[in-house]
Each structure stands twice: as structure tokens, then as C-alpha cells.
Amino acid sequence: MAPVTGRPRSSRAQRREEIRGRLLEVVEELLAEGESFTELSVERLVSRAELSRSTFYVYFEGKGDLLTAWFEGITDALEGSAAGWWALGADARREDLRAALDAIVVTYRPHATLMAAIYDAAAYDLAVRELVEGMMSTNAAALRKHIRAGQAAGFVDPALAAPQVAGWLTWMAERSLHQLIRTATDGELRGLVDAYTGIVWNTLYAPTRR
Image (tube, rainbow, N blue to C red; front, side, top):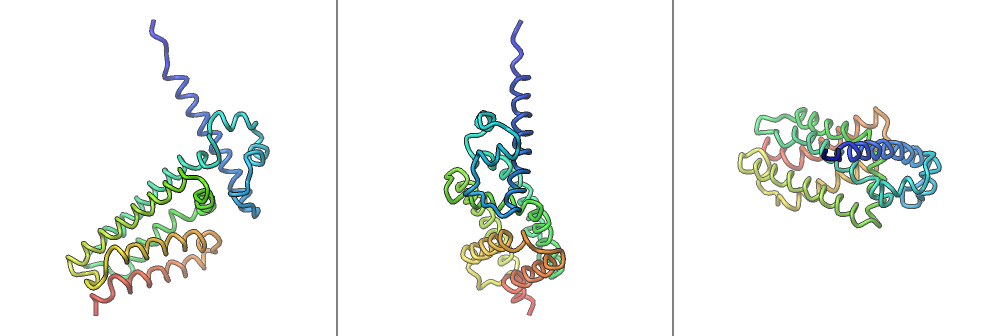
């Protein structure tokens, strides 16, 4: 009779995700209390999560590894929310753009604390840094494609250099989401989305509406 091999692997994967979820909750709690992910030790994490250090290293190579699978999931969610922006066409109005950008912000906001941990980890963890750089390259490429399509269709300013503008807007948004969204109240968030909309609208679309 052939041995059953799927069940142990499935059980291990499930246990790993349970422990990851528990540890990520602790990370959020500690960051909210003012600790930085860079200075946060594995000992501090496992103590707060009531786990052993050996259990941590059974499932994760280090703090960066703890974040990577989660990051890949939120990246997929953000790419999905950005699809509304890329779908805008010649008939798009400013309020359509605002709705598209608001969807991105709403998707990002619940994860802002852990995203802050990702950026901290990227400073010293090569694997995490490569994930962040890959996400930013993907985002910039998608915006560049949208700009060029809009220029060809006549609804994006034809004078813009698509690669450079896409790079500026992408990194501007990344820093703003990281630094501003995380601590914003609901009222402040609406103002931030309004400001973001104004910057993008006036840069890309407004010149063709005059």
C-alpha cells in the first residue's frame, strides 16, 4: 500500500499559516506601540506570541521570511485594485479617477502597519528588498503602459515622458501610502485621496481637457 504523503504536508502548511498569522498580529501590536521592525528581535516576537524560538525557526528562516508570503498576497490585492485606474479611458472624469485611486488606498490602509515592517525589513533583507523592488517595477510598468495608451488615444498629455512620469508618480504614491495613510483619520484620508487625485489628474489628464 502506497504511503499517504499529502496529509503531513498539508498539516504542516496549515500550521505554518496559523503561526504566521499569530506572529503578524504581534508584529502589528508592537509596531503600534512604537517599536521598529528592524530592531524587533525574534525573541521578543515569540515571547509575545507565546511560542518557542525553536518553533519559529521550524517554519521561518527569519523575520523577513515571516513577511514574504503575506506580502505576495497583498501585492496581488493591490494590483487588482489598481485595475480600475488602468481601465480609465477617454471619457473618464475626475471623479472616476478619484474612485479608482480611493480603491487602491482602501485596499492598502488595513495593511499599512505591516507594509511599514516590509519597508524596514527591505533595508537589510535581500529577499524582501527584491520583493519590494519587484512590486515597484511592476507598478511603474503598469502606469507607464497606461500613460502610453492614453497618449495614443488622446486623453493623456502627449508631452509627458512616460517612463519618467510613471516612476515619479509610483514612488510618490508608495512613500505617501507608507508615511501618510497609516496614521490618517477618516477625514484626513478623504483629503489625502482628494490631493492624490488632483496631482494625478493635473499631471496626466487635465492638459487634454483644455
